[in-house]
Length: 145
Image (cartoon, rainbow, N blue to C red):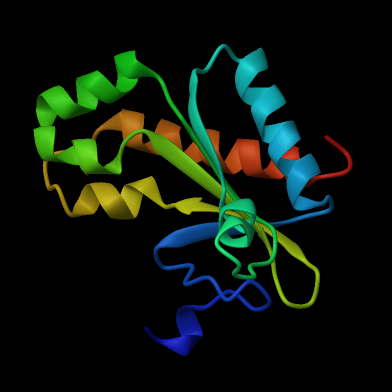
């Protein structure tokens, strides 16, 4: 992985992931994401607390959580076009605290993921997914939202 593709501070390779720094703790950021999804009527399928899971097996990990969500109607439409895209769905957002105490929100860049599937590259739903994910990250991590 090329270092020039890494977002300063987050360590994220921004060629594949979008990252946004949150003004809140991991727990508060995740609560805000969950609230935004529920307000939009978007189903939440799972939440993972990797930090807690690590602690339960006597390992250490800074706060790290993932939320899994999406619209079955939208996802099914994409999978009808390219069934192998099912591995990319449902959508996921990760939130973690780095070693300096900064909290990051990250998710896959769906337009980059879609390029690997050819036929989905021009599908307008992919751009809408990217936009949705970016808006969620900004609203969840911004003190002014």
